[in-house]
Length: 437
Image 1 (spheres, one colour):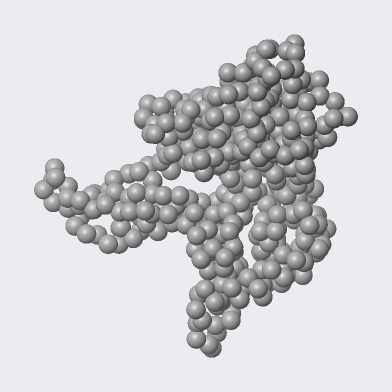
Image 2 (cartoon, one colour; image 1 turned 180 degrees about the vertical axis):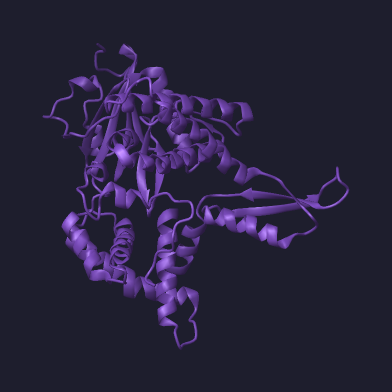
């Protein structure tokens, strides 16, 4: 064991007295409750020791691993953050060269839950919902590859999920094998995807066996894992394909742009050029930017900064509210209407949700859930039931998809917040409008 001394190195991105006081010179397994406020959270499969601690009011994840991979992972996570990609954020690295070990510190991804544990809950008829979760993993791989990042070990165990409206956002949580380049080759992308499909196939097979399935009859699990490649390639082709047009076919250009916007992508530029080989027509190439099309529109209209999936729901609610307010009147300025909606509708609802469900909820997601539950109850009743039954349902069940441990989604009791009723509407590519109409 290394003797504490100047040979040990500590890097902290936001040093505080609480962080500096932790026993960095000692192996993580020897840290005691007397010095560290540990939090008991379930840890997914890991090759290394992982512990969670509350430090200065912030929940941190601490992972001990050999020095070289620890340095590489810390640098990779710093690069992922710089490229604004969905991944856990690094806080620091404590090195102990004397025993070739280090402790990597990351921020706990609040209101998240583990792919693997959620899949374990998706048994029986609920297994059909796994396709929506695989969509989220495919989307994450596409986002990484577009920014030149090779994951190297994509799997259910290395991914966390957060709710974003009624879709799911996947986050990279393990970057031990991750490398960032200026651009990935097609071969690098295909290799990374092949590793992901193989890992997911093995994990789904393991989960099926744990659930009592016959190991010789796992065709469904293999097909589900292979569909990850199909989902990935479908989205990649949508973003990068070059279309041939008969002249300036404005309708097809507009349809392509609309489809990309529906997926949440901002179009930076379109390029139209002649098809040299045929001597006629044109080629359309679209340069796609960030996946924040609706989020940018909502921020411009209301000043709210939210995630893309949440923004689609709030924009629909804003549009529905505007339609009821403008009946028989001239439509007001969009920015003014957005500010009025925020003041008269959104903020009062958020205050009530915080009063009834607790101050620690995610206010944006809670409001999205209010709209979702209202829709579900109205659909069941065959009429618009209004807000009060939705508040009552939320109050009765709590906020099942918004817990610190991140696993309440899997623990939710039967009722309005069952996995079947809420996850059954999560991740649809063509989701219904949500609002107050």
